[in-house]
Length: 74
Ligand SMILES: [Zn+2]
Image 1 (cartoon, rainbow, N blue to C red):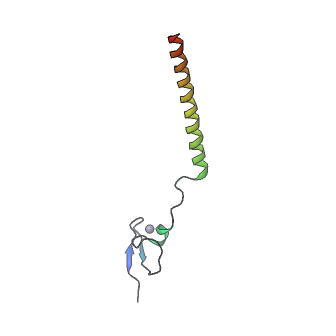
Image 2 (cartoon, rainbow, N blue to C red):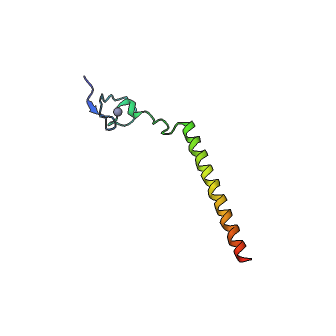
Image 3 (cartoon, protein in one colour):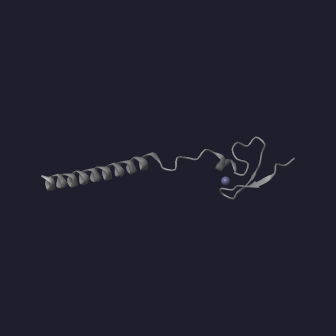
């Protein structure tokens, strides 16, 4: 007996809905696999470095502002 043919809701490919198919019934086997990390590791560390650099620039800017304010007060 053939398995029912379903259309994957992710990639719109038709696939056989086997009873032992893991994952969602409306997703093909390849789309049922756990998603790969959306961001590869090197890119994430680049983003992290960029965020970190931005944070340090902002912190330096805040320090400079605070110094200006203190100088104004005294
Ligand atoms: Zn799919």
